[in-house]
Length: 229
Image 1 (cartoon, rainbow, N blue to C red):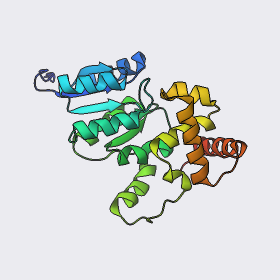
Image 2 (image 1 turned 120 degrees about the vertical axis):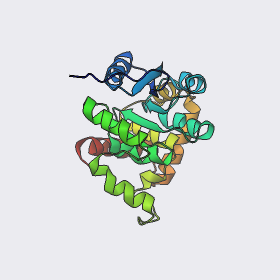
Image 3 (image 1 turned 30 degrees about the horizontal axis):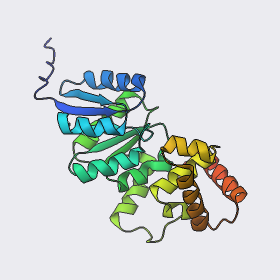
Image 4 (image 1 turned 135 degrees about the horizontal axis):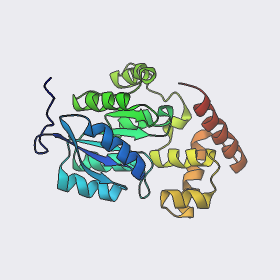
């Protein structure tokens, strides 16, 4: 029986891994290493390293997490779009796609898959994006197609969709029980900046007090973790 030969590194499709967890990067490296025509060209644990490696390694695809230690993955996506508009990015995240999939696509990402999916599904997503298509789960596809076809309603279906990406991140972290100081540390901004975001969130959601905001965010986060779309 003839064995398939691994494509030479010079000809293989190059993939850059961006995740702050070494074990996750190692797992992805092994999955990709089993493919004869793909190769990992570099690994970054934060957004700064990712941008530097994209310049030096010129990958064909970036696999990136949403949660990074120096910058939100959505902001990294926007930076990559501005600097390398033709570079496809597939987001692999622990966060439920109901929270982030649409925002990822709006930021220029080409797909979203959750980390708990098996290697076969992850490779399917990689192949899908490399072929020029957008990858999301089956349950997200109808909603995404409606959104990008222009047949959806012009008004946001929820006031939460009116939040900017930064405001949305603060909103989510409040719902997870983090204090202003903890959110500031998590997002690498000042506590004053977080307070400004909190005020904007309350205004956009029609909430008057901090207690109302906390109740709203907690209920929303819980509903997203226990239900589908």
